[in-house]
Image (tube, rainbow, N blue to C red; front, side, top):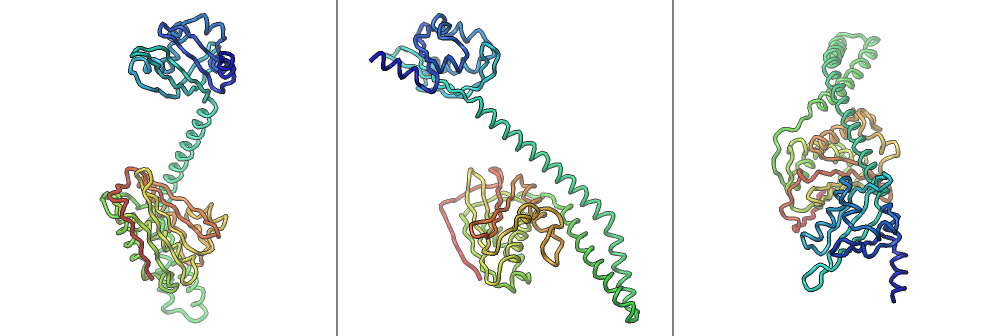
Length: 369
């Protein structure tokens, strides 16, 4: 039996150390020696304190063992940094348990697993996400500054050009009318773009209130109800939303959601269905707007949030850009995807602080023509 136990210990993929009440290490396997950078002889010839307590670099590691003794907890588990004798920095998953007989500690069992590679990988991912977030924030600030500059520097000249063109049209002969009409038409397009840029630069979160998410969705649908893209296509709305309150700037969030709904309606076919689904997740809310249209192109998935990107013959291409800005101002995120079959999906994540679920059990589903 003893040989069997030794064989099991030798082949365990994780490190195992058994410490006696007097601090002596009575059992250690090969994996523990490799992970911790100590020889089997050193473990056998030393107490636990002599090996680890003297090195202040490993205080977090030793605390896991101390807690098992002092707090009398069945199990203490933690990932801690660890410095090997040769100076190698590692991250170890440490589980310690105090075994008792007749109320007294008979031994401390410590299981150790090397988590260095996974920990460093997670840290690199966090660093990359933080860098991407920082770059996105810098880009957003640059875009805001550009938008304000455009709105300030270009609006007045464009308005003047359009006004003079319309004025000249009143007395223009047939030969001059066509170029003047072209000038007026293009100036009007520029006016529309400048107004869109000005609207974008003016976005700012005002009063944060608690409002029912269902109400926000209904107000967004009502806001675009008379838009030709909605009326002419006979869009069927389907809403699947739990009874939850969210804390947002109500007007801004309605505007953002209406931009997304309108985008779905414009690219869906006649009689298409646009569905809005919401669910509570980790104390926040995820809102998904999907349609049964052709979905986003590869280019659209990459560029749809960029200012002035549009595949339509009319419009400034700022709708989704404004929606993303509003969601970002609420510390949320918005992403695009295609479902199976190519149908477009827009997914909004509002963080924990932005949603207050009051009755997730109440589920309501309605369908509107």
